[in-house]
Length: 144
Image (cartoon, rainbow, N blue to C red; front, side, top):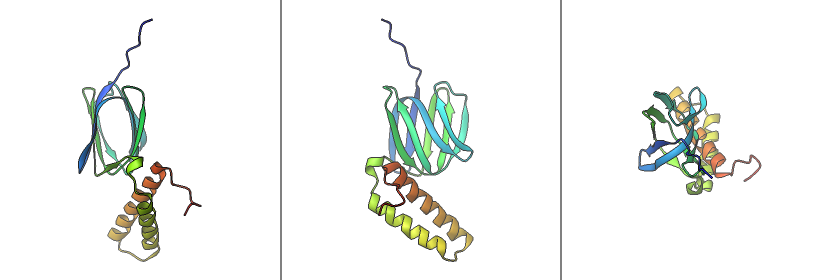
């Protein structure tokens, strides 16, 4: 029986403080400013802005991985994809209590009068905390 060859591309995910992932992948799903989209092998050359959200990627062996990522950008050239982001965290590395506290702080700040700059900063903090809780599996509204 002949084994089917899987199309892959080289994926490199770089956070500000570390190399998060480097290796062959089948698929990468990123949250962009235009919505979520997927990059697969032999994708046309492109660059895209990435917003805070969940990234998912499928490695060469078919296993899916998820992570929370910060803002950045993705570049696809010659079957090589580079994702550069502020931060990237695996679900198991997320401190759920800290994320809940950050969410509560941001929600409280959102209720107070702020300058436009403070508002956008608070909004980003809230988005990051909520995404960490979602990806870690602790996103229930009723959970304390």
